[in-house]
Image (cartoon, rainbow, N blue to C red; front, side, top):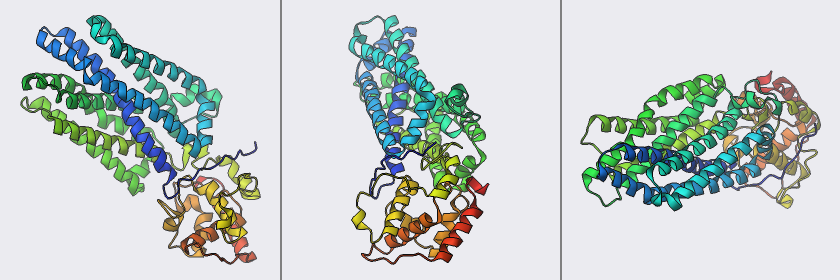
Length: 465
């Protein structure tokens, strides 16, 4: 099958993963809060129907019919908008990955959309008519919203977890094999607990803005904070997730990659602080959450979400779909063919600024960089080539680029021929030299032969197999 090339967008000094990550973190945080907010509203409505204290019932109805329902509505509207932004940026950065996901799970995406539509309808009906409805109808609407939003998470979780642990999946015909993969259940349960946590913490912020007596605020906060209790199983769910992911992925977060280990520490540390405060509230009746403390805990929850999402994305390296598609949108089976013919020989898209480069060899290197490297590296900005390889000699660059999968275990093999690799070396050195107007050609046959030997030695599979 012939490799399809796509236009490649550039974000200047900003790494493409940072663009997707930034949008994704806000989307996940908002979407998970929208799910958890609905669950908390259903819980409080049920609690209001169970209590015999009319003042408590009135307080809960005031809360549900006031700012919080607006907050949940805004959250799932913004969650939907940032979801569209995720599609937009992902299609620009990694269209082949999105195409693979749609090929494999298009009907499941459609099912998820129906649940999301039901979520929107139920949420809007409660927003528009909730204050006029009897308690049983209110509970039914909130329950319907919560169930629909959770099943939206259910379907999306299966598709996202498939990227890391596809298992025996071999193609679109194995849809259920891919969907109910090894990390499906631990990630689903973990995200459900996160949703409850975000919803409960947001309640505490909003309740503190209500003009009611202190004792009544405390009662509402304690009722909502009951939904922080499931945080107690987070360590077990996290351990379960780490146990089922591939060994090399687990090694990245447990010390193999300092960056990923640090982000894991942020997620674990922030979650631990929230959990400890929740435990303290259960045992110290005089302890509550004022607006400053609850806002701080929400900020910690955002930090935990950011750290967790960074780790979730990072542990897939060097793949976007494990064992099926590398992060640069090249499949493992295509490496050998591209080694023989060149990775950009058939690339139909010209450079946006060809006159910038001093000769054809550097221009070739720029196209190789764009196709194979630009999804994770910039030229001179964040994670730039000049930073990663700037201290290497020319010979070290040739050797290390030839053995990428051994040099950096979270990188795919180099997918071009010897001429392209040398062009990439020259492009990198030209960048490091501040892009002079003149640059000598590197056409030594002995150098080309040495690179070819190194490429053969490295192999075309990950790890050189």
